[in-house]
Length: 391
Image: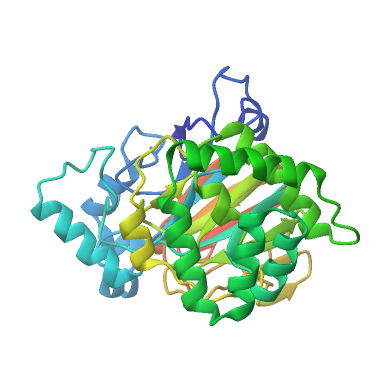
């Protein structure tokens, strides 16, 4: 069984992770439960050893020859449970090439790995899949420019009308890049006044029969209240707004601007902590680097449908080599037969049986299953999620 670290970012909930783990609340915001071997907060095994150290001691047994050959002696994925009470920072994750270059550059510049000014904590990319455990809302990817122009005109605000006209004139990618660059450069009283006017316009807007516009207007008011002088609010107006019901998912690849707004979700990603922020945060913001890695091509809302359906289970397989996710009720059918696997109990009481041991888990508890453990079985009355490296 694993003991997993909790990160207490300000946007986290004071109750949701405690409820998920069936324990008393700490009284402080709890944002992320980290489950994996990333050296920023590795999980701890029952005997007190850290998972990353155990993997390093015997990588072939823990990971398997194939995973070691592709990814080296490291677990290539990380699982998290997010409890979002307030919006996360407006952010982008780099590609593999840019992550390697950025990490090397900051090493060369002597920026300490634990420095709050550091953007590249490691040399890996960070595509991520978010599986909703509750009603979940987020923004991700630039909305098609025609829809954004229509939404902006509902505000009856000179700045918004000007941006709408520019989006209509196009071309889309160049115009979005220009609008975002100019917006993020605004500061001081000019920005504060614009955001105040924007909040008033969003409050007065009447987006009849347009659910996304209504949600964006409501969130704009909330964002200005929380961040009254943050240009990231302006960029958020241009993003797809996504609402997930429990059991639905979204996939965010490199270069996609995004923020999560509310809800509890299970996230699985390539094992990285590289985040480039544009705003909506008190943390380090690196606008120049974010602009250099952002994909400004409009995309549909990045929902992600299951690749496979079995009885009482689904398998999600985004286009990355590091991870896939299986979620289902016990007894779980066709769990991953080999490689490194992490199983997290989402509901109820379950029993995990490998060739060497038997582990009982309740909601919020997890276990690491070694490559050498081979196939395993999950029984009981519950719902589980299994992260694994795809075949």
